[in-house]
Image (cartoon, rainbow, N blue to C red; front, top):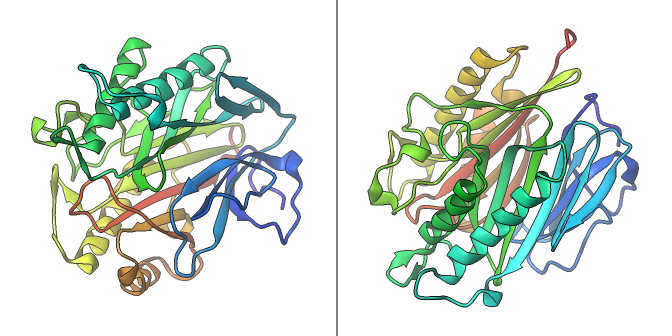
Length: 338
């Protein structure tokens, strides 16, 4: 497979169809058992693939030459424009203390490693983060585990002087199996442009009812690369203002999520040098809390976007227990003027 864009592209690869590893910046395997890896995969995220299980290898394509490196247990690979990194830490290695839970500590450690790694490179602008943590909605010491994660993550941002309010990277946080916190990320030489959704309060400004620390991410980030622009849309759900809407109604939540995606794309085009992003040309990952809702969500997404949109379907718990669907998306536009 050859990337259709000059600097960066995203797609799924299979062991059944050989690809040129010299064209792959990095890949991550999604699936249940975590044992079936593609040669390009940095690691696995233990969440089910819908509708029939198995594995999906999600790969970022780019032009080499590539340089590989490590920073402690963190692995990374980069070309001249962008860096892809992956870290998985076992929560069991971070026993709780009187001051911090295990998850808070492991989140802090993971992001401290990320910042330590990119500070050793020219790719010091964090563009996009993918976070997967076990039992995301369960209570731990009287507080939801996702909120513990947000404390540890934000502490690392503050300590290493990275933007955790306006200018935060785009991100997602989903539930996974096992005992590992898995984080993978993209960073770049150039600073991304943060995008917000006027229908929503910025996540980093959420009120304290969502925990002692707000989740620090932008609704999207727009990255300008040689010959193209890339749009990274954060995990998007049925939220207006800061509140979840359409409780217990998966179809209404899906429809609201799609409206939010449309608005984020519109806002991104206002900041884009190219201005050519459309929802029908996005690569999407759709996370569904309950497998029984798969057909309903597929029907609505396909009706909205058409059959040509490339979608990976996954089952996962979402960062709020009442949310039933989350969609993250990525867009690519050629920029002939750059």
